[in-house]
Length: 142
Image (cartoon, rainbow, N blue to C red; front, side, top):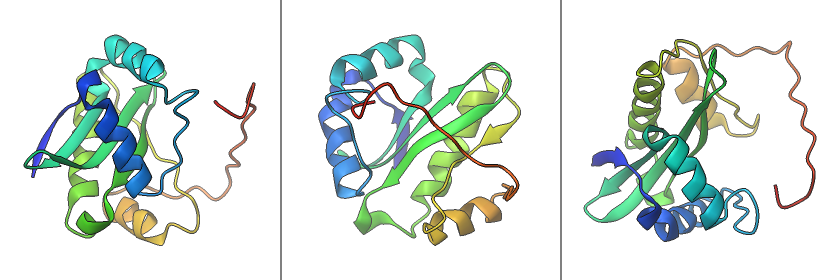
């Protein structure tokens, strides 16, 4: 397995991976090629992929607000789950955020995703059951 920064040339494979991993993608909105390209230009260190030869098998997108970092859209292809890919991507995302001075990391995991929750706990992440996650969106495509 090789871990590397993604470029916009990886975009088609990124969308295919999200589809294989059953991670919802919004290619007409926040996940459009133009939007991803803009984010990559602004934060080139934060789009990280895992590869088996030329096949993208996993991805993580990091972000931060200047105080706290987030590891977003962690996805691993179904045939590569349980093989350390998500853990390697999490470590790579944390490392990228540390290079930008970030020392607090957050994850959002759906309650039904027991495998991800187990891995996060194993990696030292703490579950906060007293926090509610709320969103407001300006449209369904976002």
